[in-house]
Length: 563
Image 1 (cartoon, rainbow, N blue to C red):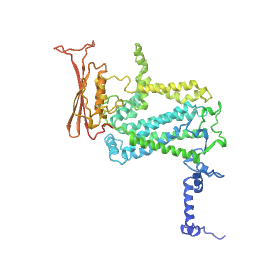
Image 2: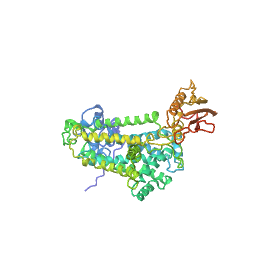
Image 3: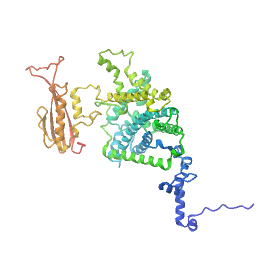
């Protein structure tokens, strides 16, 4: 049998000679598009853009059967779930935010070293020397906050529309796990800037873990998280590895399990469209089907573009991720709190039960029986999490309709109200006792910005309106050309005179220019000294004694005053 040589691979020159250069370009472009789209040729892309119906067999489903990215996506959806209601696209937005966090996080990782010696310096370099560094950090921080909000709202939407019911119980459970991972992913990144805000917020957060019973286990958990009795180099490295490797991988894995179950059972229809006990999500009539390509794909692309625009515009013009002073373990800022999404835990640690007993004048239970930190900080949150995981298996009501779930809806609203109330209780505005003079100084000229008052009211005054002089709140002479200064002084006068803990209180404000482009703002606060019977204390001449406290800050022309 004679050997036959294989046909030679046609060269570009021979193709041009045989077909002409225009057809050759089209052929290679068509091949490229077909490979990139996993099966959709260029002619079909043109038909999609023209809005023409697909041919038979339908090449638009090939990316779902032959492609890697769209293999997990369904090829069509029920038209009822393609509108804003009932999903509100919260799951899609959560996934997009995770991708944005990954991209911006990789950018920030290039310029960051997880060491207390250089972490804060790296942050300053990112903000001041790296091109688009501040924008990337602001997008990363804003995206993290938005991701927490989106995941929480997604979970609430799932509950109120009863999308957790059979056969989606396990899907709900994986969603609860994703919420926990999202919270801890955001929390683990809180420490990385190594400033006062992050250091003390994480210190408070990790101290909750120390309450894990028994005490020996609590100390071990705290030591594992911090790497030492107090947060230092080992703790920063642990949180960095959690933030960039361990938690993202876990979240990514659980997400695909979650989304596989979503696709497996289909997106649940609006409750009012389903018969009682009948899950019709996967029984989509042909006339109700909306193909993923191009309809849903275009919608998802537009949602992604809108989300990116929202984050970029928000970070560029409205949001500024805070960076406070370098972390100082020896200086605890006033009104230190955990991150906002853990404020409800801080509210629990203030123990509403004991507060209610105090208001009623009843005695506290003995500490040997009632350990508030253990019960409110560990046991109760653990029970809440466990209940959320098993809740779908305890709901025996087969109906998803709102009119058939009044008790569940009321319970959900009560839960949201309780979470909101506990979050408020976790803020410094609730049950935080510090001296009245310290609170006044913190409100107007805090040395360390805090969650309650921020940078303080004085720093909102434009530098040009800091008119040098002495101002006495007992007889205010307000400058006509400094309206913002006048407003702050009036607020100070009102704040002092209405505080019952500052009897006959007043302040003397001194503004002086200590050198070119630098001014000193001093507040001297005076109030009547009272004895244990709440009577004025008199000196040897019979005059009332006033207590005094002073505090001053320095303001530079190039600072962020009035912003």
